[in-house]
Image (cartoon, rainbow, N blue to C red; front, side, top):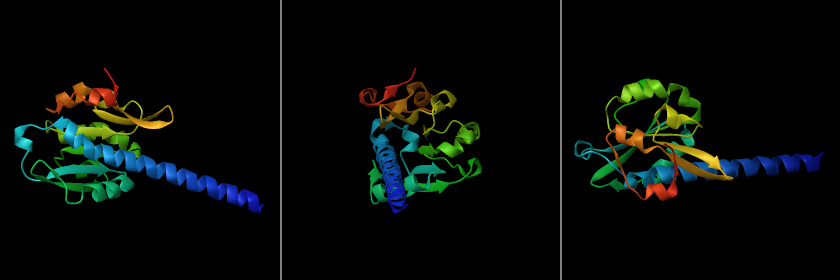
Length: 168
């Protein structure tokens, strides 16, 4: 009985560690995407806003990573939101797995704003995401659908081609 308890605790800690690694990976990549995409001139003033919908742990880690950092001359501001009604005019929005059902409402709310849309649920590049995190070969990777970024007026750096799973 005690042995089963320790086995269960060990597995639970392993699952938490894997989850923490996933959150760290996603957070670091979201920050690094600020270097691999170019926003139009009219989006290069004021704060550089990143909204995180429904992924509190990524929100917290991203706040930590971006503290006192800039994108060009823009201060990075991380916002946690819980519904499409809270979507502003972010430079980047991450829509967590459980909120992916709101994708079309989020896209409608964003309109023509130059926003990088990031998700973490299979098939979301078909719904409009430019970046989608997936688990492939036991590691976290990301899909890139360039046309979805270009549609929002973003330029994609060619170095991403080597890092991403390209989606046509």
